[in-house]
Length: 445
Image (cartoon, rainbow, N blue to C red):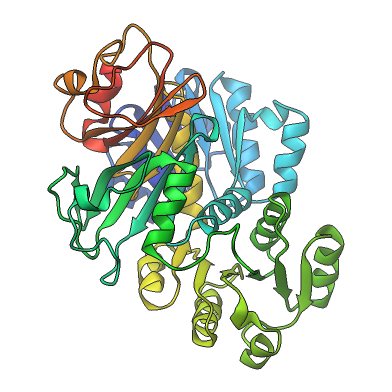
């Protein structure tokens, strides 16, 4: 495809990096430094200019574009870009927005603004937080096969009960498959004799129950269903959406917001959430309100530094698990080292969602791991697939290294794959695939 990406910030750069190998990508940005950085770091054509300007779009050959992705930091600019693209061509358009009300308006009038697909950063971030909160110790969680299959990534610490064990010894959970160990810059496809090391990130695929059992074995922290209480700090849009999603799950949380007007507004909009008006960086308040008895604290303030401070204070008074919004991607690893159990970067979440959508034309569902070092794919098997009516062991001989079958869904039932398992037409197969071999795998499946 010919893809035009407007906005060369973190979101646009990540999207360009994900698409440049398979597609002809053009990146537009007003900032000359961003344009120069993308030019030297990615195999794309760059244009310094305004993506809302028709002449700039024509310079990018908008008439021949198959896909336009508007990913600047300004919602209105992204919508105008999509409208302008539709005025002079017929590409599929994707707009990134932060304001949830724009998403709701677009959903109520599909095709409005000239936008074919809209991704809301704040809502996507909240959904990611709630998924991660549901599994103790998980850094990434996705569901496949209409919720029948779950994928999760867990950091293996020095005190983990499976650190130092072989995969065959650690694999004591029904309907669970170890599909990868992410080890520094290496992706290890595990065998039975592979030793799990402290510092590894283990990627597992299986039923929701088996993945929860595995998570419980790694850490004593309770699952969301067992949690006594969740506290959300910050009445930002991300904080509000997180509380709303918790309510939708039937879970009553507490939300702390220091601004009186915003606190009153949230109290009216969140009937099943207790909204407290206070400063969550006041440790006396945290102790007085028994925040130390909470199982999870979500830090969703507008400042990365304040989110880190809230997380550190929560840990100090005894909170078991903290999840923090980290707007700067460069801070995520640092913050997870010094005080936040899981850092969620809204821009990375957004870029992954947009990239996922561009790839779903050849798959049922896609999840990206570790900044696109690997992917988990859900594919419906037909007669053209190398897996069709073959045992997994036999079919693997025709697939490159770096591929693991994690689960099979057949007529609504989960099948745990083994070497002798025969894949049938109509099965939904969930596979772990290293990005380096993705094109070869996609062609075979």
